[in-house]
Length: 172
Image (cartoon, rainbow, N blue to C red; front, side, top):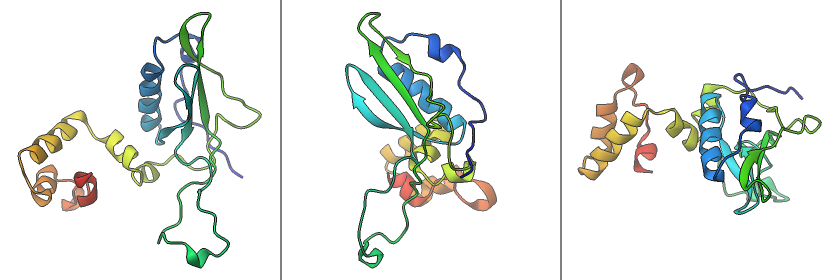
């Protein structure tokens, strides 16, 4: 299996800093992930002790059927058991949150899929993360003003006359 490193690795200072809340570090790490063409999601969480963030492509699909023909979904899962994992823990001694170093033996610092922009755009969180705040505000304002989806898509424009957001993206 071929593994891929993140193009812009986390700054080493991240591992030495202490944070007041887990939300503070979680938002920073999610933004860093989007900038590096992948999405982080909460894998495990214990509000007062730890938070594990995993690549969205991590773990396996939960549907396990003996016969694939019985499967109701028309598409295959995008999950491919990516090992990338970041652990955040709370220390009662220092009363602060810290980021643990990745376990190199278990390949937790690597991805088993290419980190491509095209792959990021398949995931709703990835698509939204790539949008500018100005675009998000514009879409929100237009929805509240009662504009229809085709009008919003036309206003946004895009490459080759194609809107950067699909009908489904705007409705969500």
